[in-house]
Image (cartoon, rainbow, N blue to C red; front, side, top):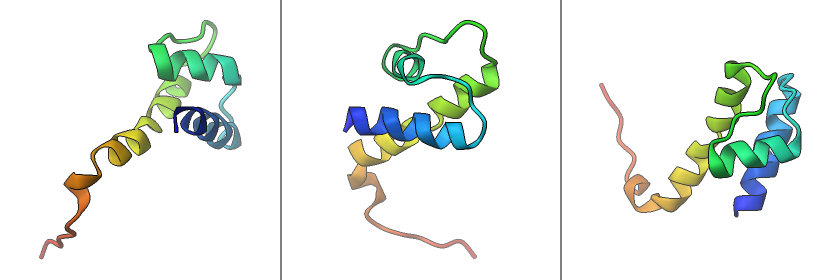
Length: 69
């Protein structure tokens, strides 16, 4: 799943104009190493995709849907 998440994050962020390359994306997601000459916003955009991994790893927390009134 890790490779899929990295590529999904990279491609999805490219659509939004992110200029990280695939290798820099991997370094950021795996080791939290930000690429030089890139904005903080680009790193945050990529790191936000980690929510997908969290959701998958903690699927038992999301078994019941609730609604607020």
